[in-house]
Length: 310
Image 1 (cartoon, one colour):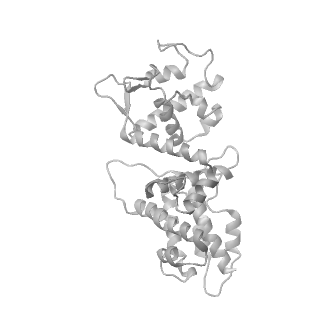
Image 2 (cartoon, one colour; image 1 turned 30 degrees about the vertical axis):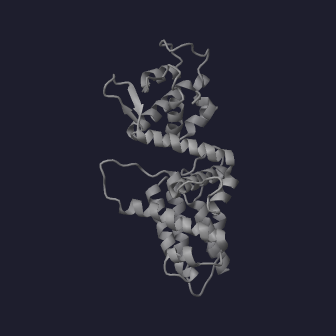
Image 3 (cartoon, one colour; image 1 turned 180 degrees about the horizontal axis):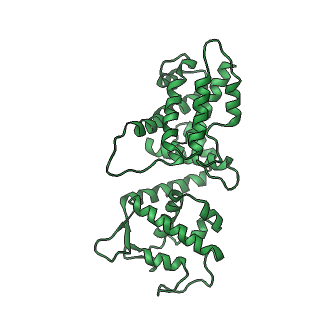
């Protein structure tokens, strides 16, 4: 792997400082791995935290020539602090582990860290295809661009959701903060305008409103459970008893609708069930915005409800 500077991922300090720790940690791990073979931060299969700090501070500790100016100019101290916070996050998540045979500053990349590096590489491969091509491929079986087992296709859907979230965020906002509503305001307006003598839409609307509140406040457990609750709530609108019946047997929405509903049934429900039923364990990782954001698939579901009920 060729060396990749932090600024090759994040050209400006403001871009770097806006990132949450999981995203910055992921980029930092790729950056650290790229030091392999350079004789600086990465030596003999191990990473040195002190050497990384020296490189960030543009401080000579015998690791070779340094650039004339810090990578991020006058904002380098803020960047350095953020990067070291990301290092600590990688440690807490078990992606960097201290080597017991060496002094305290020497670390290796764990199997979990290698999995994250592999995920990043696969996401970079999807970037080359582009969002529209990858999404079209997934909706048609995922055989051309994505390929691989179901887990790899679910990972590709995660990438799609992340890219779609980025596409609609206002400048300076991040998915899961206050920038991206899980349910579009336009779709909520359409739901509020529905009338029926057979169904009361108030609970459906409230579920959508609470999904927006939970997701935008970074309440990702609540987001996963509310998504599961919404799927359990809507089957009677389609003349079905369960969402599995909607996904498998509702034909009026066409092939793409069916495949999207199957994805909700197989992925969104599993995410919700996993968080709902998992007892306490010795080690935990918390859900991220990307893990629980099934916004585009839910919008397909809601749009079909609006179409049917008009």
